[in-house]
Length: 235
Length: 121
Image (cartoon, rainbow over all chains, first blue to last red; front, side, top):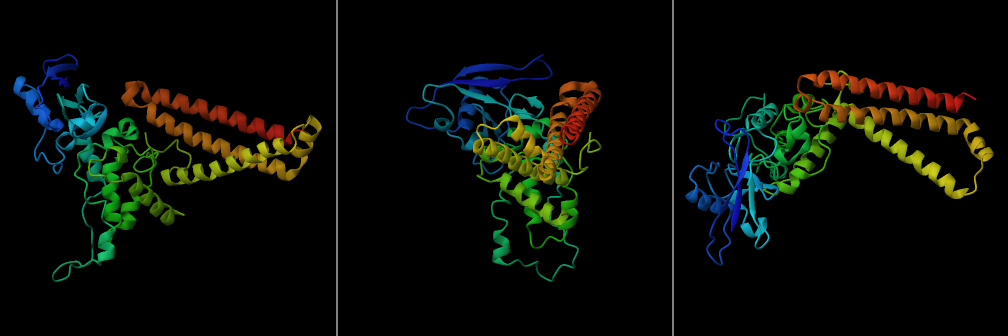
């Protein structure tokens, strides 16, 4: 199988280039894209990419696979490439490239920090723990599972155009995760930080984030909930 | 680049204004298209009679105002998406302000001209 990999080393290359490598895939086996990358690295050890858990939990190996963002470790080549086709691997779009398939995620984490992704509760803590009813706990399903792989943000044009001002789908999903938490008492403060023209309202609802989320989450719906909370608080 | 040149100074108010103005624009569009369908052979005299009705003039003026607000919010968003330092470097602020000034000028011309057409004669 022909694999085309984005190569760029800012220290030595003047511009990025695609490198084609022929990788032999064991017959009747549907490898994951990450396995193919490992086989390619056996031929050229200078290929650089991030990976850790290799089972879709750590979110390290987010990359652009044949035009679609996804996790290399849980994307089978049969899903990414048509039979006889070429596997094309590029870094996540819209972030500065550190080297090859590794991107600088600083601005992504900065947007994540902005939403204060931790529980804020100014009431004195009870002796054991803050309790929550099963119904309230259920409201957090589909929100807390995000692994911060950045596949969604880097597939979002609003994030490409204003990465320093638009929080982006991953951060906003977490923003709503704490807005929806019955134990959090900072709802008003959290909302007042989101009503400006950029943080939330740059979302045009095109659902690119939903289309690529490897965990099947729905940031667009969470953003809709935030907007409704802002409207009921602000009007 | 924040919200100084933004219509409502807040993303929330802009969002609400854009949705409300869209409803008004849709209602007016259906109304005008509907009257053409009901009167397929409408002539100038009939057309003028419709617009001599004060309610029709108010509806038209409200729609014109909605169009102006809708257009400004849209163009402001476009300018802050595409005319930024990312694409234009150091000249971005100058180019963006020039573009926004051009939009305001054009929208003002349409608004004043529209009022003149509706109430001028």
